[in-house]
Length: 126
Image (cartoon, rainbow, N blue to C red; front, side):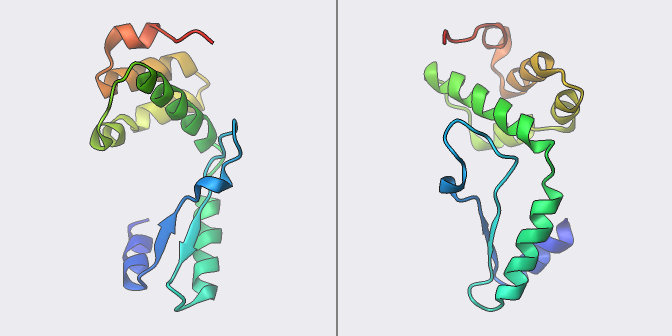
């Protein structure tokens, strides 16, 4: 993937996830938009297609878990910095979700975020 990033920089391409592409109440694996600043619409299309193929369906449970935990933390007025989120989304978290071990993945994520046992077991009422 590093090669693609270098090419993206070289072509001044930008990637964005447009918020309006996510239907309310539904988490999609990923929505990708790519632009080359008008230099090459063909390249932008190729980037979109290849990145969309790379982002497989296994990202949907990850996106759902991240949304759930983020919502819970916000309800408790807790703020987690962006770098902590990046560190928390590790290979173990993805493996647990791939194995269908959602509760264990949730506990792992909260521990990596520094949320501790209290947040791992407490859930807001629905």
